[in-house]
Image (cartoon, rainbow, N blue to C red; front, side):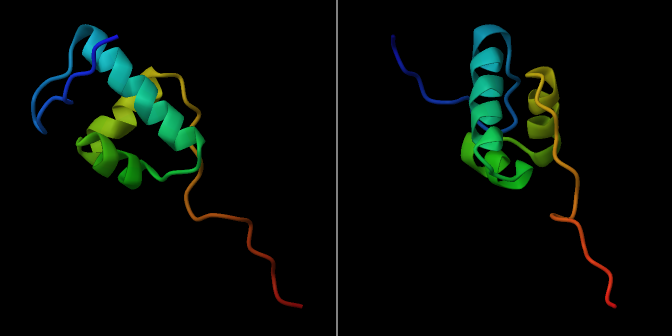
Length: 72
């Protein structure tokens, strides 16, 4: 298997490169990384990374972390 440098930021991802990038994003996200962190690691924008995660079939986590308890 040959490894190539990831496409430059702003360059369209197509075909096998897109699938491989989506899988890498999915792996990072399921390991606990945030979308923003994944975006930084794969060299894509937040929105493009979110789209890749959805294409990969990843169920996105909700915003805001854990459930807050009420005082009292």
